[in-house]
Image (tube, rainbow, N blue to C red):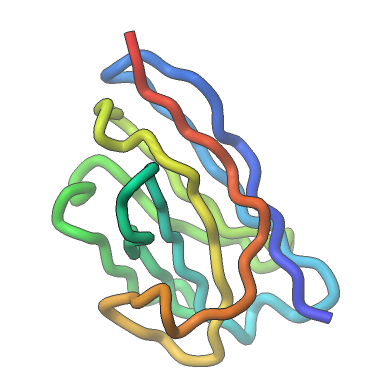
Length: 124
C-alpha cells in the first residue's frame, strides 16, 4: 500500500547543503500532502516542513526558515527537502509522512506509519 522512502542524508560540514528525497510507491502521491519530521537523540520528533498536495502551500518550523525549501515533483512521485546553510543542530534522522489533509503545525503523534528515515549529520 502506501510507502515512502527517505534518502539523501549524509555527513556535511556546517554551512553545507543536502537535498533529501521522499519517494512514494504504491499510491498516487499527488493526492497527498507531505511532511518532513526530524528526531535527534533524546529529543522529541519535530515537524520541520510540509507541502500541500498541489505544492501551493508550504510551512516551515522557525529554526529552518530561510535555509530549507520543500518542493515536490508529482510526476516523479517525489518530495524534496533542500537544506542549505546547515547547522550542527540540524543533525537528526529525517522522516517524511503522507497525509490526505494539509496540517500545520505537524505533530508526530498523529502519524503511525514511519519509514527508516535518513540520517543527516552536520559536523566539522
